Image (cartoon, rainbow, N blue to C red; front, side, top):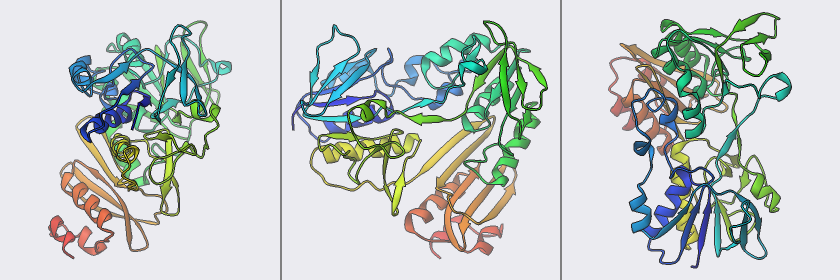
Length: 405
C-alpha cells in the first residue's frame, strides 16, 4: 500500500498508526505531531495531571518502545505547513526539513480552543486554556489555596477545571453567558445536578452573565461583566469551546463542512487523503456529524486504518462521552439532539440518570454515578430499542430486564 503519513499526533493519530500495523501493513508509517511529547491522553490533563496525581509518562498512549518496535516513525515538534495533493507530498514549516512524499495521507489534526480577542484582554498574562500538556504545565503553579480563579465558560472543560481548583482550596467563580451551564450539551436536569454539586463544593456559578473584558495591564487582575460589575482574579481559565483543525485541509482545497468532510469510509474529497477524530465530519443518519470525544477518535481512526487497507467498511458511530467532577462520574450514551421529553430514574443515593426521548424513542442517557444505567442505555440505543418510560421510573425495575423487553 506504500507510505502512510498521519498528520496529528493525538488520540486519533496514535490509534490509526497502531491499527495499521496490527492489520499487517508492512510499508512505511510516519506519525507527525506539533507538540514535543509523544501522543498522550487529554482527559486527565484537567483532572489527575493538574492535581499532581499522574506523571507525564502515564499520560502517554503508547511508549516510545512501542513505536520503535512497530517500526512507526514518530516526528514530534514539527508543524506541517502545506499539502500538495497533486504531487502527494507535504512540506514542513521548518525549511530545514525536506518535503515528505506519501501514498496515503491521514489528517487527525484535532481541534483548537476558541480564543478571546486581544481587544478585550485575551492576550494578557495569567489567561489560560486547558487543551495541551504545555497549557496545563504553564498554569500548574497558579493553583495555590486561597487564590481567586475565574473560569469563563460553563461547559465540561470549565466545570472540570473548577472541580480541581475547588479541591485545591481556590476561590472559584464560573461565568456562563447562556441562561444555564451545559446548555448546549445537556438537559436542564443535568445542568441542575452539576450546579448543585459545584455550589456544594463552594464554587460560585453565575449564569446569564456575559464578559465585557479582562482587566489588567500586562497581567490579568480581574474581569468586567456585561452588567458593568467587576470581579478580581489572580488568573483566568477560558473554556469557550473548540474549533476543528481544518486550516491545513482547507488550504489544500479539500471540502470543509463543519470539519474536514469525509465519506462513510473516512475518505476526504481527495481519494488519497483521509481524516478522523475531532477535525472530521462524516455522514450520519441523513446528515453530517462531527464528534468531539475520545471514543470517536479511536473508533473512527481504526475504521480509517481498515479502509486505507481496502476494507471499504462504513464507519458506524456509537457516540459516548464522560466527565469526572469531584466524586461524580458522568457517563453519556447517544446524542440528545431533537429530544422533547426527559425521564428521570432515581436518585438512589448519589446515583441518578436522565433519559432523553423524542416522543417514545430513546435518544440518549446521562448517567451520574450509575454505570448500570449507562451500559443498559448504551446497549438499547445501539439495538434501536426504546424502553417503557414507566418501567424506567419504577425503582423496582431491574435494569438489565429492559434489554429483554
